[in-house]
Length: 410
Image 1 (cartoon, one colour):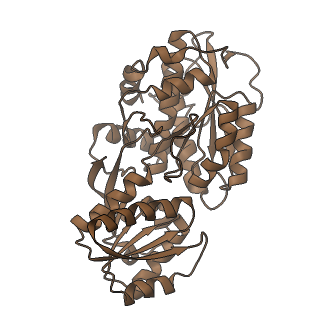
Image 2 (cartoon, one colour; image 1 turned 90 degrees about the horizontal axis):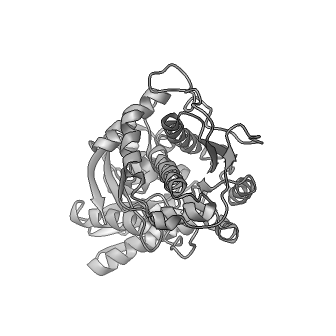
């Protein structure tokens, strides 16, 4: 852990110290009542770099609460588990560096629903968290938007929809926007797949429609024909849309939808259009999807995603190694993205602590003032729409194994 953390701690003070003015702090003195907090005292927090167990506190110091709203139950529970593990790993690294439990992680299950996300965020705010990691889904992020703005506590969300547009000063995006990823996918259709007519199968919610709109804007500008085939979230039969693409002469299929729907679409494409070129949204690289698929359904397909564990980038390589050593499994985009979110928050707290004022507002301001920091999913820095990530990865499926093709920055 020490090697990777040293890189981030060295960059922590690149935040603007001027961003850290504000009111009284939300913090605790070590040894105060922890309430209902779930500390980063899981396997991650209990493991030192030498594997000998939890670090002994070196003395008194301030303790800061960070929230996590994760999809721990529902149809995205595996992804939520990766969110939790990566966040705990980051917290444990910072606690090890401090020599005591400096950061405490409050964890709430958002149930993979918008209502659950709102309840989780409200609970984390009431618990006094300085900032919150998650929720993940675009619709869930939009559902909590007014609440975090009213309470002036920032969230670092994973929703990639273009509807998350930077208008909320307390919402930061910790993954590349669909405006980036879907445009990269559409460009790949033209430049690499030589697409002449594209079938666009997409969810009709904020996430799917936003990605489709970005792709269609690109295809319109390039004079590439397409067939627009929206579907409802949780639909299970896409044969009519696939047959429409087939009869329309589509040589490429572009899918931008959720995990369960992606697996079904690829099963049905294997039946009706087995030889068509295929490119998908990030979910195609996830175990959550691939565990539902056979090799032949996805082999040779492409995906535009946040992170691939086979990346040769030095920071990504170190992250993969440390995550595997800690959990005995390979990290995916959820682990990489939310590890980055936790690092951004911890660094902001350290910067504000050095400036003498740690509050939800000063932490928000420090994140907003973030300078370039290299993390597993690429270079993080804030822009005028509160986007922290500005690059993505193209992967190709070899059987069900995603392989790194290239990284693309906006």
